[in-house]
Image (cartoon, rainbow, N blue to C red; front, side, top):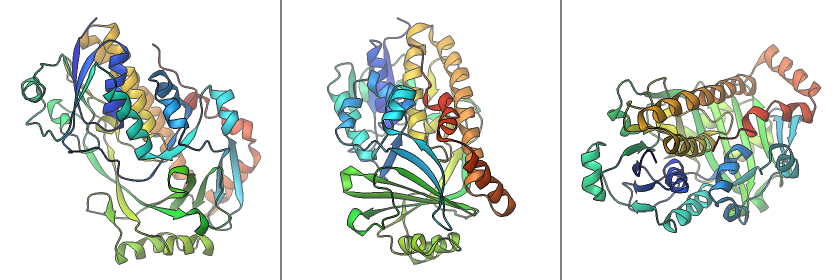
Length: 387
């Protein structure tokens, strides 16, 4: 075995998945989290088959299936007239075509499932409420009592682990803002699908809606481009931010604007993205998930990329000497993340199109069959990590 022990900074989805993935290879880990307890900010989450394939390998999927909903379709619709533009089948179709399910669930459901798996795994040790001074092996050993062979930075968009890597990615505001909120099922209008994911598209904005079994209602995320913010994230939307939301969705169907105007306790999330940069230092430290490649949610792949990263990293470090393993991991995963980001950039342009471009988009979508649209996602949802 190339390494015996790792220290993982951060106990979010990336960090917990990394611990479980390394344990599958017989590698022990200390997972270090500065928060005194784990709690996911936000509400809904989409897990596509490329992510659920990994979670199945880690024996976490069955736990999730008891709580989630498998949408029967993923629909693109007009935000101005509510007309369906295109549809990709999911449900049993996803299981047959891509080999694993597509599910929607509360973020805390995934967090808690991963946490239960980590706590029952003898090779994983979780350290909560621990703020480390630096990310070097000495600082980590002071917290855990064991010197790591590998340091994994899984500490998200505002990663401190990047400081240990020369020319690592930097983070900047993307020019996009998300408003997140939920709607009780009995208050939700009939045009919100009870068994599917719907993305309503409009000029410079889109709105994603899907049901969540855990809350008995719907998760909604409204994303607008061209907005400005100098603030952090997960801020409760005040009157000024609510006004900004309605302004961004002016010209949309009145029923959608009614939903937005009546949103209860929406949160205001400026969206940040990572630049190009090094993900590893050449010998013992590596970044995964948002710490490495924070990207916009236009392909609903943020969680999936973190999960893929964690599993792929374990595979690489178990098969090769560490410097080579980290170099190969970075090369393979950068190519994958770059392709996903490019797809997200394309989706942003298509989702937020205006004028003649919007009309052309609608015509093209109307001519593409569900089967053909699904085939366009084979590279994404059908992805398998060698193991």
